[in-house]
Picture 1 (cartoon, one colour):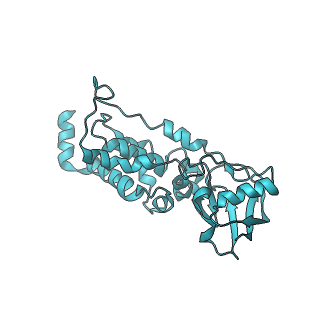
Picture 2 (cartoon, rainbow, N blue to C red):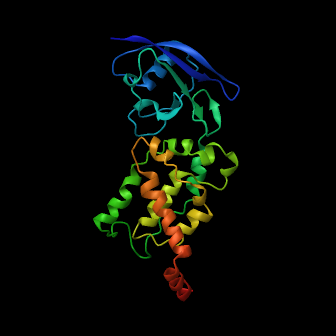
Picture 3 (cartoon, one colour):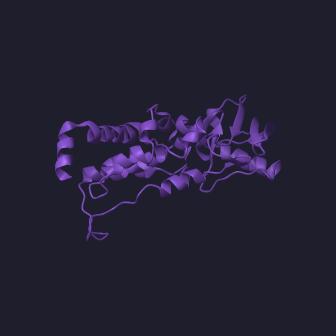
Length: 247
């Protein structure tokens, strides 16, 4: 049975405001359904980004009652009927209009991560890996690039001047994934993570893991092990001997 819900939705650009709406809610609906109904019945000019409505494209990221979430995966049944539900755009990225933000920062950082470098002479289809090596990085391939982890990371959320030097958890996770790959021949990935992607700025608060809709253990399985490998290569005396011998 349907009911009327009270929504507060951000309207406008940086000089916009939260506006109040009463919208019909039906059983089984998610927040994105209500935003679409608001668009169809009251606000035809409401800007919102979405695509699959199945939690796999990452397009409908927003902040719902202050928590970064996918609108299509946030069920209305998780709220009390008397609650006021506040929907605002991701705060870390420049606001375009209403619930749409400019996430181009993330694509710029993606281009800065060197691609997978297979052994010379090894063609696609000839790769051979142990299943345990496949499984180590398989978790990170679940990323849908919703950028909620980037949005909630306070290193860039609260310090805009860090953006030029810090790639954020999504792309540090990408570096970690490639560094774990037994066939990747790029030798300096841990060093690049520190020098080029700002790994040292991450203070492992696990807020990125907390908001990941795919339940990827970004901090425990990617960032902390990557930090450990950086420390090993820089400070381990045995590795230092091998490195000097190689040079």
